[in-house]
Every structure is written in C-alpha cells, then in structure tokens.
Amino acid sequence: MKFKLLLWLLGFSLQRASKINPKFQDKLEGKDLTLEVSSEDGVAYHYIFKNKTVMSYPGRASKPTFLSQVHKPDMTIRFKSAKAGFKTLTAKDKQFAMMHGLENKQISIEGNVLYLGWFQTLGQLMK
Image (cartoon, rainbow, N blue to C red; front, side, top):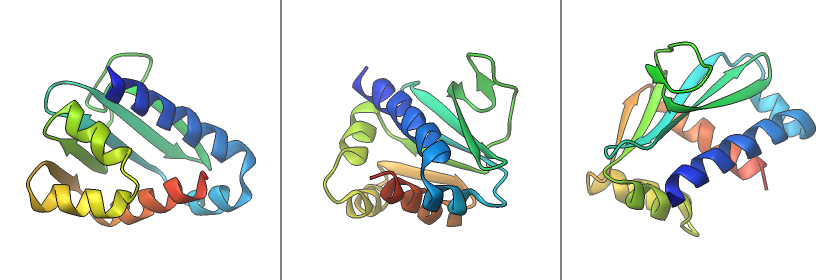
C-alpha cells in the first residue's frame, strides 16, 4: 500500500512540477514517452510525458486500470516487490540504492536504459 501511494504521489509531483517549474519544463522539451514503474507483486503506475506535460495513471502501461489508453512503455522499472520499490525510492541516496538494486537483481530495467538517468534528473528538479 505504501508503494502504491508513493507512486501516486510521484505522479502528482511530476504533474505539479511540469506546470510551475521552468527548469523541469525545459527537461520535458521534445519528450514523447511513457515510463512505467511497477513491482512483480502487481503494483504499477505509468507516466506519460508529452507536450511538456505529465500524466500519470495506475496500472501497467499495457494494461491501464483507469482512463489511459494502452501504451508500450519506452522504459519500465520493475522491482521484485513493492517493499523493495518503496525502500529504493525513499532511500537517502536514490542513485546508489537503484544501482545496488540492479546489481542484486532486485530491480530490472526494460526498454531504453538512457531514460533512467533522465528520469532521476527530473526527480532532483522536483525538490
């Protein structure tokens, strides 16, 4: 439940930053992609970046649960469990936690891995 709430809050924060933060808006320039964050135990959200805006929806991009069209995600971050996802995304050093999780096979990345760095930069701009 914590992980699901965290993913919803992430979507809310991304949407808010896309409306009020000029540096954040600059990072969105020219991006038209879908990112999915999910866990193997079923928790999932996907974020659509298009026209300098962000939309977030519950569920996997390929099987949305609310008002979203079916999308093929450009990148998927999948955690072994919701607990591992919550722990990684709330760590003090998120980049280290992410790399450690990838190394220990607690996290898998599907799609274009270059979007991971871009996505982490967006997280830093939301502060």
